[in-house]
Amino acid sequence: MTALDFTTWATIIGTWALVVGTLVFAYWQLRQAQRLHSSTTLLDLRERFYSPRMRQARKELSEWLLREDRGEEPDDWEVGIFFELMGALTRGRVLEKRMVWSAFGTWITAYHKAIITPENLLTKWREESNDPLIFADFEWLAKQMLDFDRRLSTAPNQHRFSITDHRSVLESESHLRIPAVPAP
Image (cartoon, rainbow, N blue to C red; front, top):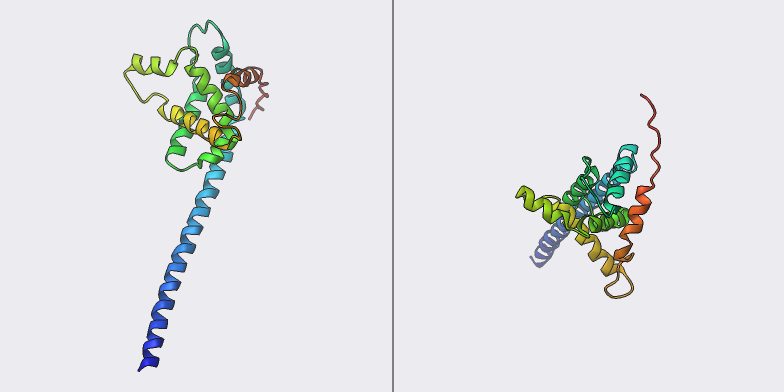
């Protein structure tokens, strides 16, 4: 009878080990699929970011943000909308923060800094429209990118690039060449 009890217990323990192992393996596979989906989505976003249309939008917005007397706001806010979408996808865990930081962190923080300096346009637009959510995910994403800079930097309280260097990023953006789009 003890041999039967030992066999029964061995079967039960073996079955549970198999179930737990299967669940762990399934979780691992799901996690790998999520990471692959995140990287694929990020590559698609990167392609869109370098498209002629987006390069033109980046050039125009950076030129406007660099002006001392900005004047009338540009009509095309595709860059901000792009980062807002990226923020929503990152906040919703579709995109991994570290991958976003690696691929877009410099641009995100530079554009965000320029939008809130010297005048915080986000606050202005939110007050004017009575909508506290205007570019909220973009703002959240910029803060996440700065946090990554601080955590991954070798010196305490440092960033990947100086926060005042956002102008050099925008100056580079303002000189983007726009490739001709071939006719269909």
